[in-house]
Image (cartoon, protein in one colour):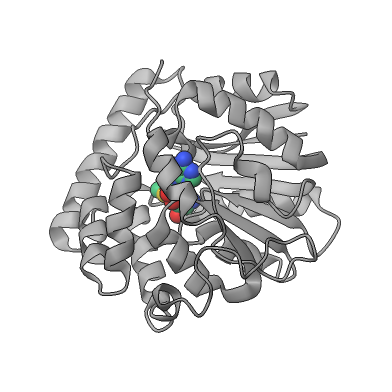
Length: 297
Ligand SMILES: C[S@@+](CC[C@H](N)C(=O)[O-])C[C@H]1O[C@@H](n2cnc3c(N)ncnc32)[C@H](O)[C@@H]1O
């Protein structure tokens, strides 16, 4: 299925013009310069979140769990796979489209000495990641829709690239290319894991029913106030005095406010990963219509 690229060139340029680097961490001499453009710890948009970042992280997690009640399971499966392929306590990890730092925070809890790079395009989520992570990770603004995005990464030999609930924002052609770029960023034997909505194409009827049931449960949770919906979460963030201006910039980058919802089945991902040159590609985890595919360089 062909998709129109979601991020317009002009929006991407606008984004690229502002936040080439949000911050640099402590990963070594090849790190981006902390004095480069973008948000530093002292930036009001980051320091203003010092007292509230943990609460925003918590509400982001509840909002995402509204879509994925088994979210923590897939993230744990991802980190189990990392543990299986690394023989160091300081693995180099890339959290791709990492948002507020969900994967990075869990990776650092599991591997406190990990050298993590987080990449995203959303200014509000990047500010939350920066405020939450401090100098424990390198946090970079980059547009994965552009093939030059790896240009400022601090490493070229990651032990693992991890991503969750994000790559469905990219159209098929771009995601296919991105898989090749990710293979080139991994050391031989390195691991890639992508957790996302990836139906099993052998189960179309069951998948439809599981999806309908999940939608009903989600609607009940929203109605009961158990979790915020995607649009309510963003409305609340937009009303926050510190996040508000960043949310307004976000709307320029993502004019529709959400992904195009292109969700190919696992078989599509495995074919694209194999074509990109990964030596093994298969299903690491499955829950309902969602899955995590893993591949080794
Ligand atoms: C639903 S969020 C998931 C964030 C995080 N991985 C998590 O699990 O909480 C999707 C993320 O993909 C990011 N994203 C979408 N398109 C992107 C692009 N072209 N470049 C970089 N990040 C992108 C969004 O900014 C957002 O942070």
